[in-house]
Image: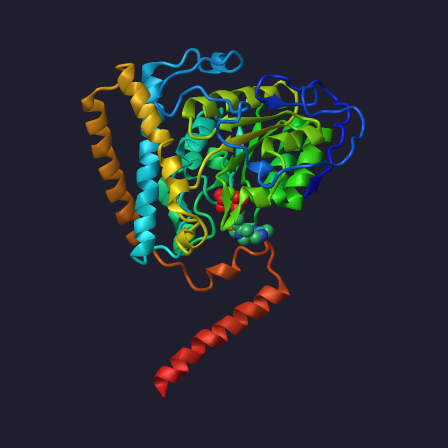
Length: 409
Ligand SMILES: Cc1ncc(C[n+]2csc(CCOP(=O)(O)OP(=O)(O)O)c2C)c(N)n1
Ligand SMILES: [Mg+2]
């Protein structure tokens, strides 16, 4: 396989050149002229987590490591805030496990688990200000939690009783998006609007490693770069797009893609909640300061199946999962809290009780969700109605009525 390296164009504004980033000024791979085709090894697009470019503030053992560039974004963090991040991750994981169980019991049609991605989502979610706006995929349950969306509201769509379940503008958290990558364009357009309004808020778009291959994502990178849109592209590289590994999406580490568009990209340890918090804060600050887009690649792992309809044992081995289990995001913060004496047994016991209560609340809420009116599906297609929708409604009514006839026979 070959890869062609091309020079980045001159940026409209200066981009970051920190360690761990590739911006238009970053050293290494940016050339000033087109270079010859070079051969790459198979799998070079999925450099290991030991890659020196990886930003990490907490080791898997929970040890705090210094980072000259990003320490300042978490310098003032208090023990209480650290416990808060831990609580967020534990409750999100519990909610997620409960949703998976509910699907297995037939209460949900489908569930997309975030297991393993708690740090990427809580770290980035807690970096946001209230007036920032989030465009998620279908897996951002931890970010939804940070935005104050009640977790039970996430379940309606997966139960098939509504088309979303929350008002995006109440929490600045857009509805879940199933069409892979499309939300990056929505986010870019929204961010361009934010800039035109002269507002100093930022926008963040979540997407996956698989989505990075979508044309929509490429277009959103181009538009956001040339319009200097205040948007952060937060890619959770969880190593898989259903059964396709990341090496089938890219020949270079994903964060390096940004360079070709003229904005900085950084790879962060996606299982390190502190690093995710710090790097996202940095990227959001750039956006708010008018410095344009940033690509953050959170290097993490999808510990579970793609969705409850998927069986990952058909395409990946146990060794990989076991290796990532050792880097568990929750365990590493727990180790840190314990070593620093920031949390005692009472805290963990209380949190366990809180998790149990959340699980109970979620189960009860899902079972109590009313079925929608059969004709409601036709109501929210067009604001002023449409002849085709009217026709379809009539056909559906006739179909429903046919059962009544059959019963009458
Ligand atoms: C445009 C489009 N193509 C295909 C699909 C089917 N699909 C659903 S999820 C998925 C993989 C996405 O992988 P990734 O972006 O890595 O996100 P992850 O599920 O790993 O979080 C695909 C191909 C879709 N929903 N939309
Ligand atoms: Mg993925």
